[in-house]
Amino acid sequence: MKLKDRVAIVTGGSRGIGRGIAIKLADEGADIVVASTTLEPAERVIREVEARGRRGLALQTDVSNFDEVERSVAQTMEAFGQIDILVNNAGGSARGSMSLFCDSQEATWDRVLGTNLKGVFNTCRQVIGHMQARGSGSIINIGSVAGMIGLASQVDYSAAKGGVIAFTQALAKEAVPHGVRVNCVSPGPVGSDAGRQIPPGMKRGLAYTALSNATGFGRFGEPADIANLVAFLASDEAGFITGQNFPVCGVMNLGLAEPLLG
Image 1 (tube, helix red, strand yellow):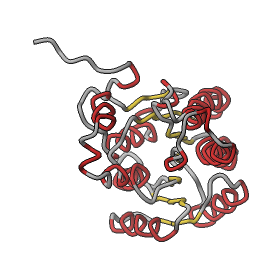
Image 2 (spheres, one colour; image 1 turned 45 degrees about the vertical axis):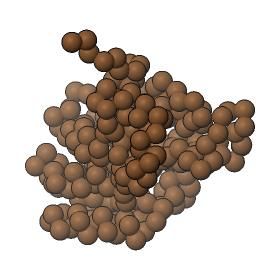
Image 3 (cartoon, one colour; image 1 turned 90 degrees about the vertical axis):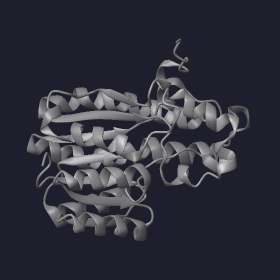
C-alpha cells in the first residue's frame, strides 16, 4: 500500500469526487478525515473507510470559515497526531445562481470564491506549518478545467479555480525547501452523484452532448479518474513532482475534439 499509516484530510469528502478520493486513499493504507458541511454523509464515508481496516473521523466543517477549519485541524491532530496529506476538494459552481457575468450578483461571487478559493487558503494555512516542521507532506488542490480555459456563465467559478491553480504554483515554490509538495488536479465534467441524477431527457440535450463530446471520449469522467491521480500525487512515487497542474478532462483543455478521419 502506497500510503500506509499516513493521515489524510479530504475536504468535501462526503460524496462524488471527494468520496472517491477518500475511499481510494483508504485503499492505499491512509487513515482518513472527511471534512464536510454535512455530517451524516461524511459519517457514511467514514464507515466505508473503517470497513477497509483504516481509522476515520468525520468533521462538520465549512472550509470558508477560518475558525471552523482551525477547529477541525486541531481535532485531527488530537485524534491522529499528524497530517501527511491534504486534499482540497470542497467547492462547486453557483449552480442555481449561475448567470452571465452582466447579471451576476456579489453574494454569488462571495459564496463561490469563499468555498473554492478562500477555503483552500484556510486549510493550507492551518496545515502548512505542521508539514514544514515535519519536513514532509503532500497537498493536492482540486482545480477545474474551468480555471484553465474559462467557461461562459461560470465566470466566478472559472476565476476561483484559476486562482487555485496559481495559488498551487506559488505555494509549491515556498514549500519545496521544506520537503512539502503542492500540486493541483483539474477535472473536466465528472459523472458524480449530481451528474447521475440528471434526467435522461436532459442528457440527450445538445448542451449535455456537447460537454460530453468536448472530453474527446463522448462521456463524462468518473470520480475514480480523479482519485487515482490524487493517490499517486500523495505517494512517494510522485516525490519529485510539485507545483504542477494536471488536467483530467480528455482533451477539453485543448479545445473541442475533432472526429478522426477514416
